[in-house]
Amino acid sequence: MLDKKPVPEPIGVIAAAIYLIFLFTFIPLPFYDLINQRAIFTGENGSTNIECDNSSFLNLLSLLAGLVSICTAVLLGFADDILDLRWRHKLLFPTLSSMPLLLVYLLSKNSTAVLLPHFLQKYLGGASFLDIGPFYYIYMVSLVIFCTNAINIIAGINGVEVGQSLVITASIALFNTIQVIRSVDSIQLWHHVLSLCFILPFIGTSPALFIINKYPAKAFVGDTYCYWAGMTIAVSALTGRFSKTLLLFLLPQIINFIFSCPQLFHLIPCPRHRLPRLNENGKLEMSMVDFQPHKLSKIGNLCFRILGIARLIYFKEYIKDGESWVSMNNLTILNLILKFRGTQFEWELTNKFIILQILCSIFAFFCRFCLARIFYDEVN
Image 1 (cartoon, helix red, strand yellow):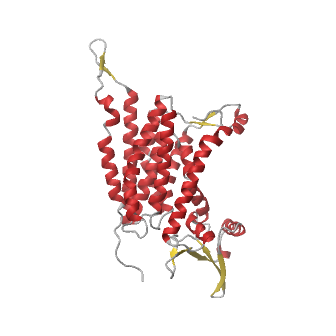
Image 2 (cartoon, helix red, strand yellow; image 1 turned 90 degrees about the vertical axis):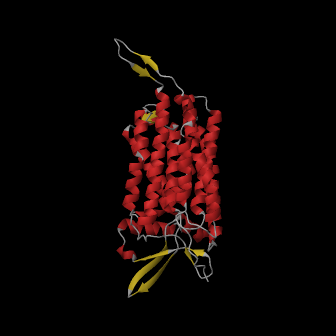
Image 3 (cartoon, rainbow, N blue to C red; image 1 turned 60 degrees about the horizontal axis):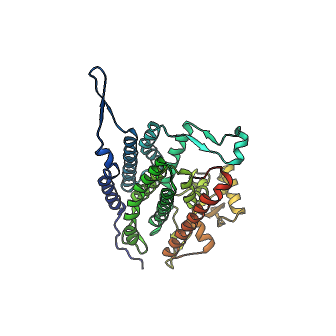
């Protein structure tokens, strides 16, 4: 018989509060020189101007903008836990949350150019950079929206939300540390230090949460933790100026998103909850969705056939009320693991996904520091 003892939720809001309190207290430390900086008074004809180090103020603005974005993400997550928000709200609020970061990036006059690989340079006049202007800001907003929701989509089993977040943030911290050691540019050095300022407190608060959330869970982290983790990851990458490298660390989340697209865009019916289900043996098995194939759109039918040919789905056909129906597993990476590995205990599935996340992080470092030299002239 299953234990019906109530489990507290969302405990993630407590960890987020501790994280924010620490960062608020931490604000003065990186800017000690700014606090003690003496203003230089200059002027003509009795007027007075104050000259200060603008770069320090812009760095402070970057830290505060990141904090505002993280605070709003925590608020969104808590609202989702209490009010069960619709998907359109989950896309709108992260967009608004990214505004402080975008404004500071614009005011700082940071570059909107992207480094081009060798095979594209010959088609663009030999230029190694391409300035994409406003499209870079659209990319930044898209990254924030994706990160904020990516952790939340791969959720629902004990320990998987905190486990994947810890692996990703530990990878980011290691990458920043390597770059700090290798950096010869003071501006680049500061970006990576600022990224560490956001990531290290997160790593410090999450292990305790993982201990009480892993199977059997004594507390659930809720959507608050997922949005907080996703926004912290996005903020650290954008302030550290390594958004492309972040995409390598998020390979399982990107695979999950691509695999889920037919359901997310309602080409194939999508239930509200797609997490694996518990069977009578106490193991997790694939969750299923039932639909009538002839009612799918042409694109939906094509997606269904391609997934079937690629053997990425399990489905069975049956007759109901004289009509043909199909029962198919929901399109998530957790269900995909269960398809290839069979039914699993909850802790086994969590461990397998965390191992996959670690392997993808190792592959990301290999791509960033080895393979990148094949495609780019300059690898910082």
